[in-house]
Length: 363
Image 1 (cartoon, rainbow, N blue to C red):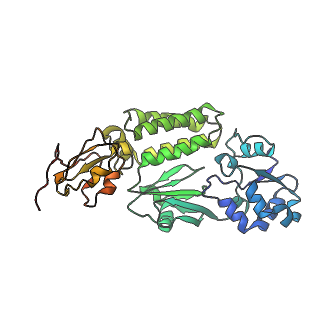
Image 2 (cartoon, helix red, strand yellow; image 1 turned 90 degrees about the vertical axis):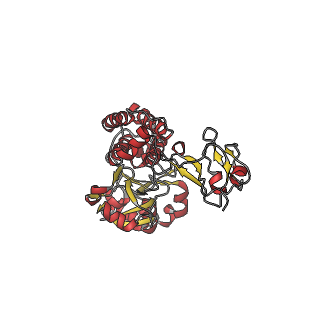
Image 3 (cartoon, one colour; image 1 turned 180 degrees about the horizontal axis):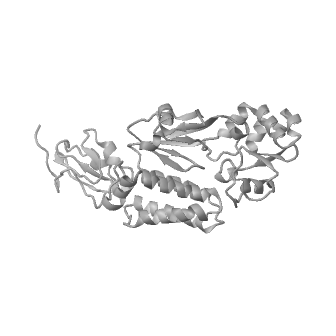
């Protein structure tokens, strides 16, 4: 398959269709470059619906003479940027990768010095950006911005890297279509768990370290987020990921491993707090969060009591209400119901509250 020239337009991330957008804007130029690349074996992989919208065979019939159109029902997938998996699609088989070699992107085909990316997360300027291919994290942050106090940047597949602090000044070569900005409201365990679930959905199951490794990562991260983390979990994750980076058959598993290792190295203190202190500083992991009624603000209106379907709030009119922590399921309905601002979400530090309902102080 090495004599094939493959142009893949199926995006890695459905919400970040870089090659697709670029191809729509520069269709003729893209097809011409592909046709010239290899006169005999040029393949264009594209989602079937997108192909029908563009009407490539009729609208660009002269250029399509030397290009074999491969239409697929897939709308996204990490494996389509893998050359061995893309070759399987051409042969009419399932896109199962077996090597680390990647398909040349449309931007690389065009030899562009720019890299189009989509920015998500806690960014002030979300959406599509045209960035320099050689760039620093600080320059990315200057363009994307951060809604609140900045915490870090995640560079998605195939890079799988977190950057923050001193690493923001290091020059990097952008190879991803997906960037996420994190701020103080972001929990890095929760974020890493969501990343691992995405990689797990992409895993083909062909190699033990790729599928089983990613499954184990998701299970361990889920335990940590559910307040079940063990003291040796982080060491176990690092050891597992170091093996995955060398043993996985394709870059999907190795990128997952790199993401985990990079996150733990960058945010070790915050992640360790989840395990040792049972504390989520961002108050994102629900099992770490408790709800409390502030005695100096409660007016005994019973609005929160009426909103609680689990009978976890004790009290009556003109009495300071108390939340029974054993019964509370952290649904947050009481917080929404209280107009006095008397209910608060807490992590490891709890406010002083009465153990049982007591009369409200006269105001």
